[in-house]
Length: 112
Length: 115
Image (cartoon, rainbow over all chains, first blue to last red; front, side):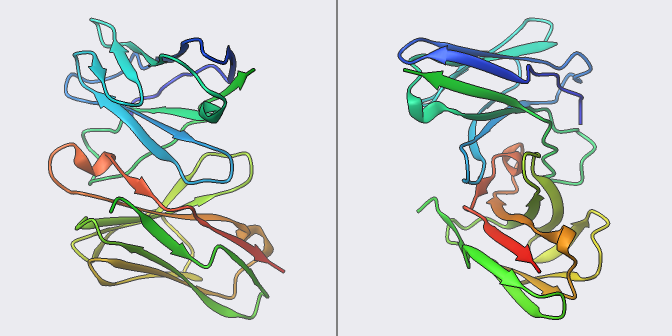
């Protein structure tokens, strides 16, 4: 998998936008960027993925830079329930299928 | 139904015991996965099943034995485990088309303690 770099931790005030960065400078042209989160004591939860264009769903927005070397996950109005570890993953095109390699992720704390 | 269920939620077993973890999904997914997660660490892939066949074994010790009886069920049989095998065991499933294998649905996990 393309190596990803994320800040170890971030804080965000409740109701404000949370912007979580991820660097993936070795990404290949057809590799997607995936984001997951894991709330304490729960299984990971898929959030969103993208290739080149910005993506939005009911949970978040994903902004990918034009050179695709970095991306930002945006939670537009963070709530206390968004406190979790957020993982940015770029699966390798050479994977046999389905392998998710989780890095250390960013621990997001949403504070009242 | 987008739920992956895992039983039991908690399991305590001795090093000489034999136990099994169970995972079930009814989303029609044809890929199922086992991950292991130690405290304060990210999940690590153990096994991948595609169309009920084992496709990936990430060099997992033989004391862990996976089984996929049908497309909805995944088991992990445990035998002669060590205390260092204590962890959260996560099951996931996904479709297999295009980029969908990486859009995985995870269960809540089984917290295993080996004494």
